[in-house]
Image (tube, rainbow, N blue to C red; front, side, top):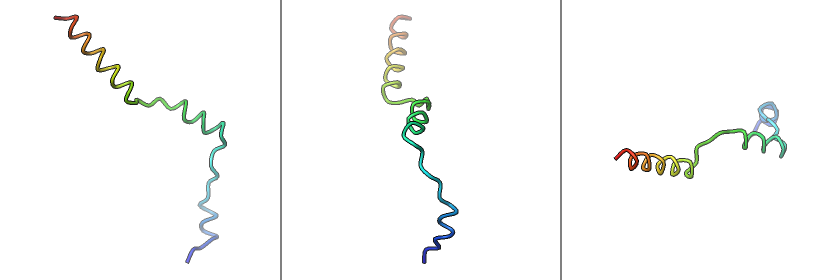
Length: 50
């Protein structure tokens, strides 16, 4: 059975919308576009060096 007292002790409220936005936007993650841009720059550098 579920022990509601224990579950209440473990409960952490979710972030408010503004706090969630800050947490998401301030997190610097590399996405697929960043990887593709880096690959294109490397290819351009290799072409310039030839």
